[in-house]
Image (cartoon, rainbow, N blue to C red; front, top):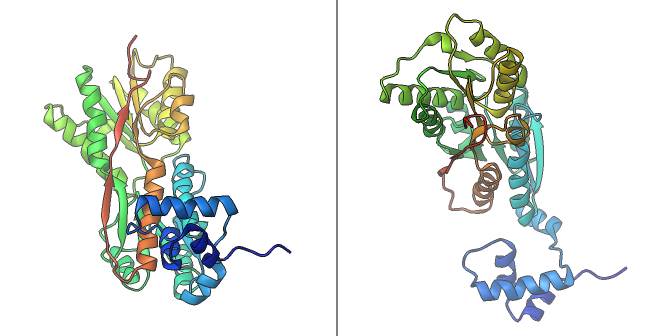
Length: 334
């Protein structure tokens, strides 16, 4: 059997210390770029694989990270997980994706894995736990909230500014001449829904457009919901000329319902989605939508988690990543 290369041999071939090789492997910013490249050149040439099992034993680590999500059939989720995975691999961590179906008992069972030292940290999407419970857990364990954020102390968080993103989407409608603007989507029990609703209301208020309660319809946030809620809007005595959807799945359902009802998009009713998933480009017409930096959200969340799992100098950052509106055919009148 061929003998595996050791970290000492990598150091000798690169002409650096073992400590420097270790810093490169751990992504330390203290290493100069030219030194890092010398070390990485040796690692690539000889396909060096660090002894992660030995490292885990020395640090009493499991090298496993739990990712708690309400659902795994979420189109938005795949790119976020790719970002999580890519960052985790850099430090030898394994990512375990655990669906909770928004069941509090299931989420608490998974957090128990931290207490039983079966995992090193948690990244959570849309936690069912109270802010107080999350804060208490965050004092003992490394926890990062991603996308759906509660004001829980002792946890890190990364998201976009959902309120501002919704404001920008609705303002786009208004600047195109729309005043009859509806909002559909959900789920109604998550924070981002309420923030996006606030952005919708703020944009209307800024342009002195009254909010019509019958044009705000919240549901479970799935494709079928987009169809059903749009049908409800189109059965009203007055229907909107534009519909802001709180995710792309709902928006695709919305577009299809509009067409089934004999209307055209965007000439009669314009539509904007949210997330900029692959569904947005597959829709006919293609969706104007709010772009979330999905990969970067995942990568940043894992970066925050790894720092707090491996450093004595813990911090509890709140990172807000930029969004942008991607214009396509669902709002462009030809």
